[in-house]
Image 1 (cartoon, helix red, strand yellow):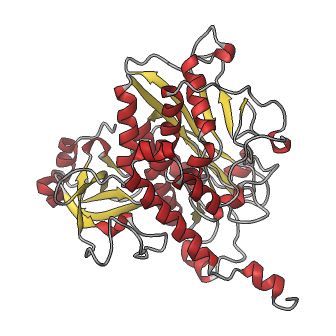
Image 2 (cartoon, helix red, strand yellow):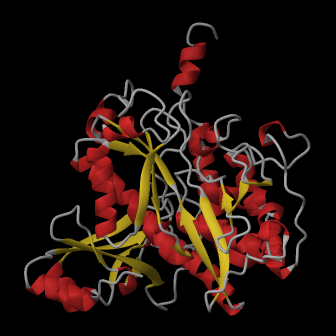
Image 3 (cartoon, one colour):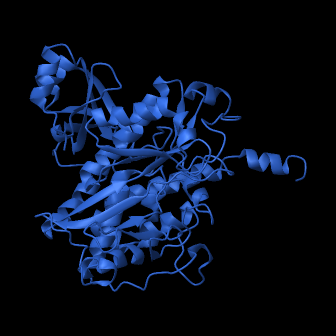
Length: 454
């Protein structure tokens, strides 16, 4: 929750510090979509509600009006949804002059009920399930990305070829190398901090030009909100510096992939750590055993929400710190799920499956749904994997393709119960469309490999 209120905004508008308010919804891809309001009009009336076309939660990355969705179509006329600002998310945006931002919930234009397949509503439903059980989730998502010396415009003009990374060699934890990039990274850290997102650190990551930004954990919905604003903010700040950032999960075959590791733990509504039991092995409570067992039991079913694109699956390569096996292990970065903070109240499970291209609301919701199912059914946790998970034999694997992950999601009784049939059918169509679009495209690799030799 932001400490910046509508009264603070009214004062800033009256005194000339804020002249623009971004009212944003989050689309299926996790991007911010919305309107720029003249601030005077926003504080007069638009803070109550505004509207947008309902196709915004039924498009692909290219904003195509995709056929096959039940909720929206040309036949139904692509009407409006209501955007209801959540004033708890209101904040100043320091890197944009005179600008504030608020996130909106998406409501049916007629019933004013939340649109079930909107990402924020999907996560709120799982948060409510936890609250009804007397619990809440704290989560933190790490974000990795690549920083380039080109602008977005010049990168596009070059066909995304011969791109110049911000550094020439692996900069994982490398202070001198990241000093060269500090103009951008300092602006990101201080900008996010000024927007009410408590930043912990930035660091170099495991490839040339690769960065990571870490912010303080929060309750699941607040963390998802932060995540969406962070991605948009990083791009805007880099653009303002004449640079470009990509959150593509695997931008280059020779480079490491970019992840979004998700740390998660459950607490009581009175702030008691429910995953910690000082008498349990590693400090794990029986509840944590059940929760992690749920994550593993449904690992294939929830992968789509952690890896939603064709490119997402190019990241899962042995020896790259991206997992290939959906198993858990104690402080082991080769596993899909890593136990962190053992023997302390900060004990948590880190999901290492997700890429930097995920939608945080959908990813968090899927993880919570799987964990809740483990708790409700008191699933038994298998023994932790020991050793190099890349070489593990006969253990659970992460689906290798979007096609396989989409099928697993579609057939999941757990997800259909947790999210609803219409929601799963909606995202099944999104996964199918992504696959259909890829299947009919010709790649540079195909042409270079077969142009002469085929």
